[in-house]
Length: 169
Image (cartoon, rainbow, N blue to C red; front, side, top):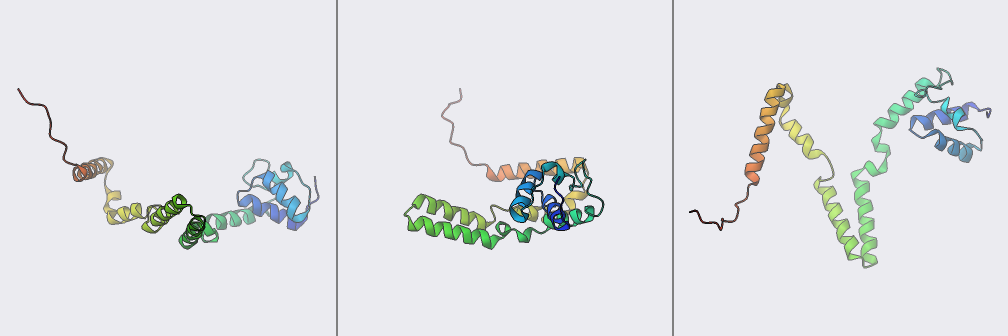
């Protein structure tokens, strides 16, 4: 087992808290800190693993980093609406430059979906916000209300069918 400095231990704990696998952490430690370690040694710094032996000093650090990692979506560029639209614009520009109209049209469609909210759950949120009383219903009342919503949606979507060619006798 490698003798790890406090810096290396902190590096391992933070990487594990961000859901890196022990094998990935071994590679990162080798590349970033030039330290050779093993998967087994890295695992001992994961409080979620049964072989956790690093000591209670690392548990609150792990939990704080994990919590921040899970809650801070803004740190991930692709989660930003503007970032995705800029990337689509670049793709569209490249496709047009190379005369790839199929890709350009697909990119335009993707951008339209992005702007129109098709790729988000905003519509579901607005339905839940519009009907806040739904949660206060009993399960039977919910079943009846859901059936009524489905019936209503189906009746609005009903299209006239072609007339029958059969004659009655």
